[in-house]
Amino acid sequence: MTLVLVLTTMAIFATMALALARALKGPTVYDRINAVNVFGTKTVLIIALITYITGHADLIDVALVYALINFIAVVTVLKLAKTRDLASSSEEATDHD
Amino acid sequence: MIESLVDILSWICLLLGGAVGIIGGLGLVRLPDFFTRLHAAGVAETLCPLLVVLGLVLQSGLSLLTLKLVLILLFLLFTAPTATHAVARAAVIDGIEPETDDTDSEPTPGERSSNT
Image (cartoon, rainbow over all chains, first blue to last red; front, side, top):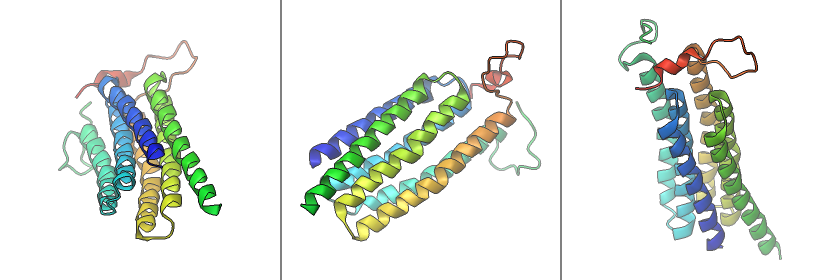
């Protein structure tokens, strides 16, 4: 049982490594944001799997909170990359690029 | 009998989820274009959590842990397409064009804003 969980964890770690490679390499900034988004999703799955491997049921709350934070973080970084200024509203955002 | 059957089903779901994740990661590295890489990320972000969480739910039966896992799955399935759509829309507005076979089209003008 634990073997299957650990194997799945290893597979997801490999996916995280590939996503990190794309995040470091990616030619456009959107490639990097996309790769970081995949990385965050895989982190949620890793925490859920570790919950079952160790048997500490409390860890699943960490995964839940991470899933919530990840989405906000991706959208925020996307807006920061687009407008270069988080304080500006989208109407008065001039095109800096 | 039923117990072992559910266990085997859970193992299949978990390992299939890991395999789908690796396939999505490989696509994320190997595909040639931003939009095709977005497609690979879509595979790694929806099908992989679905299968892994399904496998874990089959492990734990009916409990509070299952409820929280299903909440995680629901939230991931709602937000992953939204984030992907936002990234794709921002890329299109920034002028990144999909690679096509047209030889007379200009190279992608979005390349110059590549680095932050």
